[in-house]
Length: 166
Image (cartoon, rainbow, N blue to C red; front, side, top):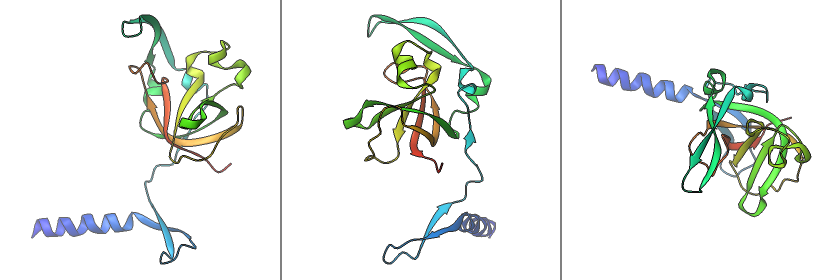
């Protein structure tokens, strides 16, 4: 009996975790629903992402020294959290939908030698399709993922990225 009551309570919590978001014009779907998470995205600044130190580390697979990050406590708190970050879009490979977000326009970005690796964030978009131009300025929303070990990705990545309402 207790398990039945627990199941009913859980079921009612799940049902109340959805709210009416807006009407849609899709046939057979009068309303679109979004989950209530209780978590609003954390608006972060580029200054926040400077809470990191780097040391040179040898990577034998590429026969090169690269900067290995040690993330500070303020940045570690962001790992796995939904964030909002404003910056300049840098196309890496438009056909593969690979972009980065930079604290600075292209002429002063990390790849051009004008800033550190903490000033760029890799973008993994929720949807493919939109083509961005170099230096478009946007606020992006998505899940922050810290990366210390995969040398083929940036140290900061926003997964499920999408343009936030600006």
